[in-house]
Length: 75
Image (spheres, rainbow, N blue to C red):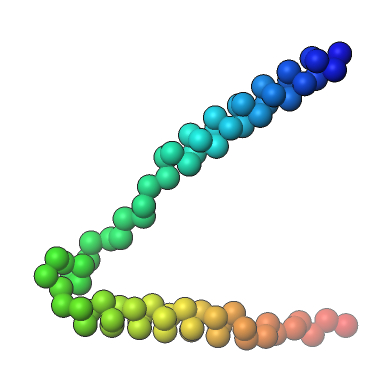
């Protein structure tokens, strides 16, 4: 009986391992959208400006998330 349980456990581990390998093998690097600023001849200043814009958006999102929610006036 123990051997049957051990075989079942090993079979389950093999199946999970194959599924994990399949999932990790299909992961590709994210592709950035090609916009007007994403041309091959874009100057380095555009990357700096884009980085600062992303940092500002993240800061604004964090600030908005930190704002306390209004509590309802329930009695």
